[in-house]
Image 1 (cartoon, helix red, strand yellow):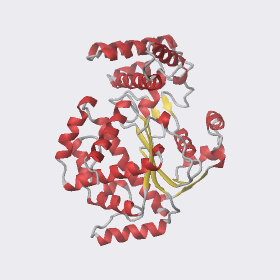
Image 2: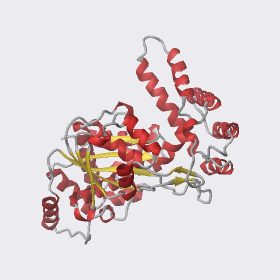
Image 3: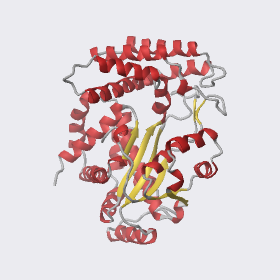
Image 4: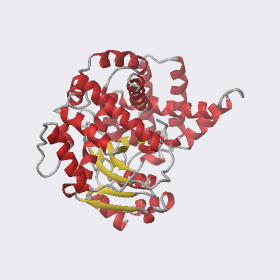
Length: 411
């Protein structure tokens, strides 16, 4: 449950399997859509199952099928098992759909079987919209503002903790600002050919962002502490050069053209493990040839052990453990969607959970407990199994949900 900046690389050798869900491959401005992007859902999850021992795909498949047969439940997947079959027609985008997923008998047996196999989970979850636009304030100006804040702290305060909290609070509030009247903001960015560095006028971009911040402040009830954060954000935007926002897009209005950097990040986290990934042609080509010069420089600078990492790509149709990973990343994504799409404020979240939990069926309650027990057990092995780039409020909601469930279901 630590912020990603506190998560360390894994120094143990594990057997790690990775699949992804919602791989958009490209994120672009598209003002014909109601959110101004080419996809309404920009939550990307890369993850799956982790074993502390060398797992055998064929034996696990036989064990899985036998376990389901013994419980008189038949899986429909012919070529491979997918999350969709276990989702029971549900998802995390609203309470009723989330409950529908949690009511899945197949999901219940899946968690129980995985527990018997001593399987654990790992993942990186990234809200791509947040990841893209937080770069507006990710700059030297942000560092300056954080340093100025640190100078105001009394000596008896835990300065490091206060600074981290201030840093995350600024980003979370700016994330809220981006979410506010999002289409109107992205239409204005579209009209100046954002993010094309050869066409965008920096001062015009600055005026657009500042006026959007002002609009947010005028339209929302701002707390006293948020007033301080808003002023800091305005200072940052007034001084930044938007260095991280500009690009030479291969297509107009393209904000992200590949997600290979996420795979590299995760491979690096498990640099001493043996890793198997589901086939992803674009990523395979990037990792193999490094044709993209920027990507090549990024690897050499930040991940210079990438060449020593034991990883391979396989077809999930022929590797049952990758199918397990497909199911797990699907489940993880819907748990985060439940936190992201909920309009319950963070200060009302626990009160909401009281009502939500009290109205669950036995199957729904058991499934959410099984998942959260699996999550906590995985964190106990390596805190980096849970890596996120999301708004702080969304991460807090997930962590609060986990703690709520665990605290009420102690052995």
